[in-house]
Length: 168
Figure (tube, helix red, strand yellow):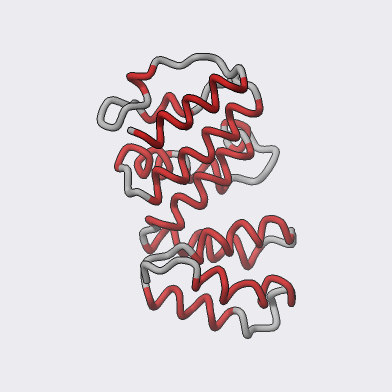
């Protein structure tokens, strides 16, 4: 409740459209209302921050929201599916699933990491994968930091990313 009040205060201060507070109270929030197509960029950025924060707190509506949008988040850029998620929400969905990834989702993130040539995309996927709560997955990531297929800067950052997620 208090965290959501802070977000609402930031929205009000930035002039973001008012959203009914009943949408944002725990237990009364409806996950589909996290994305509004006509929102200002600051609003979508704040929504991304909120999605990721609530996923860290194991909010079931947000985890379900992220799972529902996983395919769109992983869709190739420029595709119709990818166009349904603003960039900041896409990143938040991917990181939210990093916290809560089932085996299938973790493997999809891992495959996307190995398939992309974009350093920015690799950094996002590594961050999401490093949020795992599973020790075996964390160990797999640490082994990847020693592999030659990761760029040196990402490989050097990976142990710190894994260490910053104390739940595994």
